Length: 427
Image: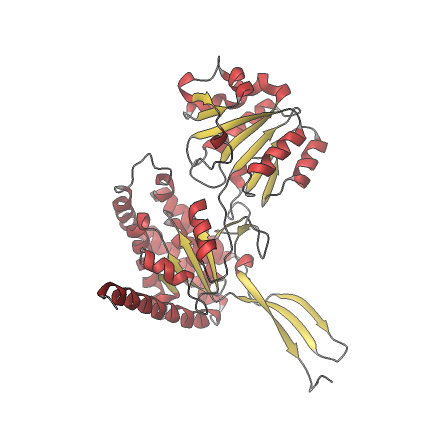
């Protein structure tokens, strides 16, 4: 065996040992009283705010390694305001009812055995994520509240930020007499990715957070069950019955509130009869220098009104793309069915919206579109666990097994059956 091979094997053994400690810690967490968990979470929120300068200094080290033009830059960037918001979300999680021990089903069998189906912790939840240091706080808070330990594999882009955050979390855990490996931040290298994806029996579920490439890699290589949190290729359909003023506000908010998040608008679909209103619908987008890739009809409608340097003909690649930037495409259709066909072809099944006054159109769109969240006359920016009243979220699931849409406390628990008998045997 070569020296390099021995070193790699040693690294994997070390990571496996670390994950075994996290699995052991998960049993301790599952037995903690809800009051103690809530107190610990409030302490984490307090230390996050208190150590804002420390977190921002370490975050700056990460930002200095990434060009501001990189679509991931905004997701990587932390500010005092964002840290305050993260702390508020942690406190919200602490204030939510415990998702554990809930009786989901109860009945007595003919043989007299009493059955109860109750919610229980997952155990160890693994998260593989990219340049999103807020995820470190969010995941820890949600996993702890749900009685689980967390194994975190962040990207190298956010290495300094994640290490700073986890050090604060570890301080609080130790203060409460709990092993720091309850929140286990693995090294930001490929060996750690291999270890967590192969940690059968040590990690109960993997949730990827990041680009479609990351999600595809995790799904293809993980031996541990995966809950996909898909990329957001988001559409808004402006119907023939749509209100132009209402539509302009929704489109602007969906596209520009935060371009780097998965609920941001990528493609505007417009009914041909309303092309004359297209300049009004996207006028505010020009203020944010949104580059538009328009099909032939939409391009003609915008040529005289939208800044020429921000307007270009749409190519096939501009549809079905998650831009994560100040860019969007426009597709012209002749009716609702064409809009639905376009969405069905290009959607990532994350968030889709219709702007229409016609209630029949609204209802058909809501029923027909296959996505985790479907809106009528509202911004897609609301696809968020906190906005849905769930506290912080662990991700937006775009699959259909176990969980779909914003995943929070209920979605990261499992269940078991309790069977109480009086000596029954089966013949």
